[in-house]
Length: 102
Image 1: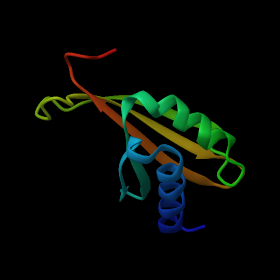
Image 2 (image 1 turned 60 degrees about the horizontal axis):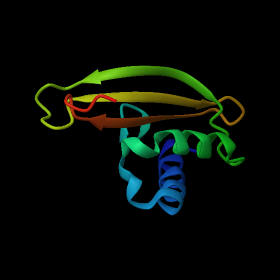
Image 3 (image 1 turned 30 degrees about the vertical axis):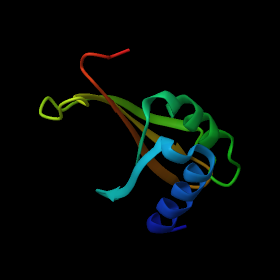
Image 4 (image 1 turned 90 degrees about the vertical axis):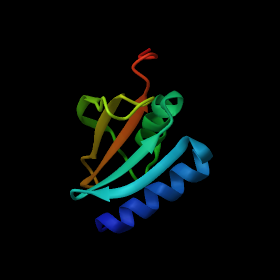
């Protein structure tokens, strides 16, 4: 599956399963990137892990993000997921206020 098709496929599955919890999806620097509401990220990771058509069962990296100019969403976490059996890679992002880091 090419990257644009992967972007569309994952977007459709996340939208069907999580609705408004998927805030955006886009292709950035060769990666399908999905921005989520913070409170669903664990459920999304489990969903992507369990989905046999996607099999995102490897967390390649986890990184903290800091955008001080982005008021109300200054902090974030980025998850790079990899399907070792399908050779797919995607990125998930969540953002939140510096006043609510938990």
